[in-house]
Image: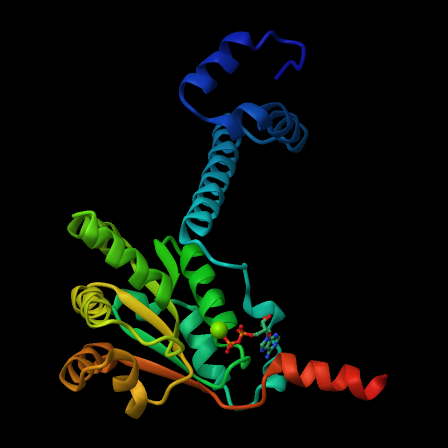
Length: 253
Ligand code: ADP
Ligand code: MG
């Protein structure tokens, strides 16, 4: 292609067709193809590939923003050696996201500071990259929003919006007990999610103490039944990562 050729019309078409990557790159790719002796079909294929890749990437970024992660964490920064209680092969397998297709759940259980939120976020991040719609909430914030939605007669709408996701991450179950209505609304969310979407829940509480948070033995039983029917459990029972680092720093001083 003659690089001096006027391309106003081409640029205009590409803008109308919403192909920004092709618009930006066709000159560079045309020059490369001319130099390497490729034909027009190869040229077109290369451009379309770039457009598709960028589109996919932008969509993944949008899904990550929409998920509402408190901080973006990935497994690259997770030190498994520092937390040997965590089943690394299981985490690695779950990162591939097959559990999402089966609507299976993941429970991350263990002491504070052992990386539960970190791993839950990394799994959510991977799911976004795999084309899934993800939503992250602390359990307390979700229950507050559910109560508000109910007071404003928006509950059904809120629940429907939540149900549009493939994965719901519920962080920090067990720190704050719920009111009776709060517990019932959480149950409603998990009930509707059952076999339709995946839940990742992090908690510091062993199952036998869940009634203390939910306030009702029957409801706890029913909730656990749904949550644990198809579940992968990751246990993290070591020392707090933050505490360990703080101690290390303290020893050095
Ligand atoms: P939890 O949710 O279990 O209380 P977090 O995931 O919030 O713990 O971890 C606390 C902090 O320590 C976070 O900043 C997290 O990234 C970091 N952290 C925890 N465990 C590890 C680890 N094994 N490797 C790297 N960072 C870790
Ligand atoms: Mg946490």
